[in-house]
Amino acid sequence: MITIQIEGAIGTITLNNDAKRNVLSERLVDQVIEALSVFTRHAVRCVVLRAASGAKVWSAGHDVSELPVGGQDPLGWRDPLRQLIREIENFSGPIIAMIEGSVWGGACETVLACDIIIATPDATFAATPAKLNVPYNVTGLLTFLNAAHIHIAKEMLFTAQPMPADRLERMGIINHVIPVDNLEDYTYAMARNIAENAPLSISVMKEQLRILAGAHAMSPQSFERIQGLRRVVYNSHDYEEGKLAFKEKRKPVFQGK
Image (tube, rainbow, N blue to C red):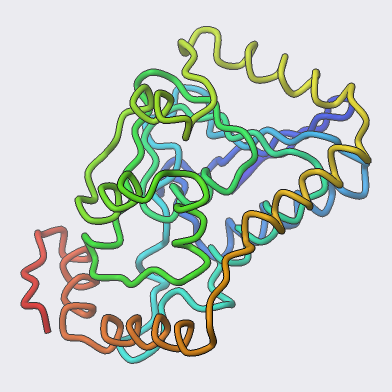
């Protein structure tokens, strides 16, 4: 479901399941995590995470067919997406998300968790949990809040509508918007620049920034309240309706209960 390549100190992971729109299934995520482990063993200093050239969809996010039945947390600690985000954040070197095509749902969080984002002008980003009545967890919301102003995060999450790359670049959420013909050259030039710098210094700074980005004070009571709010969603009628509508390829009819 992926291909990997190591050239010098630069590793590339290419999502390669176009037939399924590169959904972040458990199987695909396991392969990406294993690739990062291989890169660690080979002392890779910078990683490019991409889809195949010409892809219309970079990734469609969660594999909805893998979401659990009602009454179970759909985005728990062992959810494949949570594991993927942790591995991206914990990898010692910078990971550059090179985006061609649209990015949906949990793939938005995956991209935002990367260290640098470079996209084409036609790339779009849609955070879609509200389309399926799926609750986001605390760490997922923090990924959005660390990348975007709260009003932008709210617009993305509440409307579930695609945002164009150029708008996200203006707000500092995307680093660069580059014409598709120059995308690879620009991205790999940056990767080579990073790989030529001191890897230990970069690794330490990445870990320091990760810790600082997660340093949000919260009382135990507030944390329990947030977790309790999630149960309202995944115990609901609308949670099952969202999954069913997706499978039946129709618009869901949410009742708010």
